[in-house]
Image 1: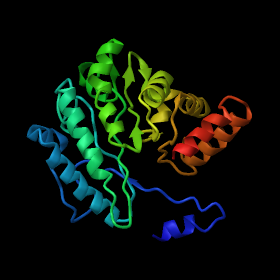
Image 2 (image 1 turned 180 degrees about the horizontal axis):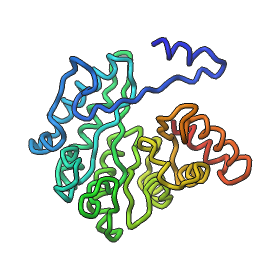
Image 3 (image 1 turned 45 degrees about the horizontal axis):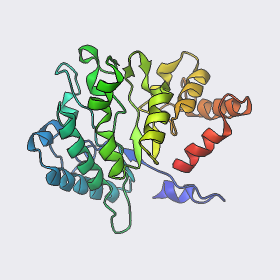
Image 4 (image 1 turned 60 degrees about the vertical axis):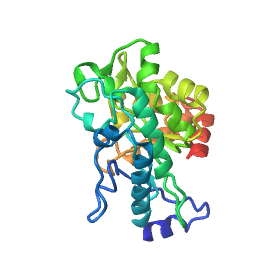
Length: 266
């Protein structure tokens, strides 16, 4: 509350948005209700139950002054060797689509004096990487990719998802954070997603050894918000991000219209 009060003091009064990983309940908070992971909820095949659990989670997130839930994970796990299989509702895109949309509806329940937004993740293909390697490469043709890995995002968007988190993984060798076709052409234009895209934790660092180039690639691909855990004095910190992004716009390497679109979405 104190952070928010300071954020609202300047002329523009841009509020603080606080996001939290609450993937099976508000699970980082002592005393919160802990629900089964998605693999367990998926076994129920019960969208009403999943929506109810998500609504409880939203109430507890709001109760701690937070506004943004980094959930649900709508990965469609295809290989049991993937270490995050438990975050997937099912190997079936139909089941993931059904329950993922239910979780979005539950999380985005309007509360008395607050509103929590959902963040389906990780767009897209994180459950289909070769040999189940985390943050690996999903290798398949586009028809297969759409049928399995893109499928859950369609009902999630229809359910009103306000944000989507981009995946560390690649599709046929191209990192998702740099894939303009999937982030902008497919997600924003074809599927009509009106919310904002956020990166995973320091994920844009993987696009290039040169941080300025990594920023250019990700923002031009359609990324709207970058999750940067590093502060001043650390490599690839948020101060550098802001400095480089301003330079990229001034140099014409990132269009001002792209920045305006990101700001409007957020």
